[in-house]
Image (cartoon, rainbow, N blue to C red; front, side, top):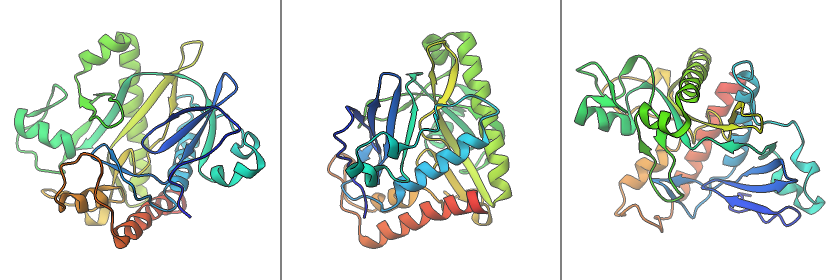
Length: 292
């Protein structure tokens, strides 16, 4: 059964995001539940993708452990089943985490190793991405000479994140923290990309979320290197000049692009085969990365 929305009453609801429902666990922790909701073009669809929340949680927990030597993260190790009422356990099993409650850094920390998506559009019009000059003659999906940090300003639900310059990040958090975020983002991306490459997956780009603890230390938080926050391409099918097939929700985006729709709610209902194939893509990405 797909979970479109949680109904936990034993804890105070803090917020519902595009995918995650968050509840307070005391004053210093949160229960984050990954539902099976899916969004595209910043619109939450009415059709869930069965099993998606479990995949997102499984991958996030995998990467948090794998990358913990680079930066602390928000994981507490507390079992979600232990903080909800007995009749609510099924809502959190395999799809939730109990995490530290951090002060979010209000910048999307994006790393790109390939030129695609909004970065490709920016490059076509300016030859730059987020103020960074790139070589002439790049094609869609070209590999960049080295990964770049291309931050975005976080938007409200239903609005588009906006690519910004590094100077914007400095204004938001100060030079020292901006440099720390850029350095950490690129290191996380490079290490993850190298690992994924050994499993036959290209991580074209990804976004990280950071937060500060009470002592002011930077932590990695939210979802990490999932199909929702990254572009995963099968290395065997990659070539320049096209938008490569992917393990992420690009499959849903591509179908929606064929519909007569102005990209405002409500979105068209997904056909059963798109739902099934998307669920399979999510699961395939997790299996390849975790099990090989």
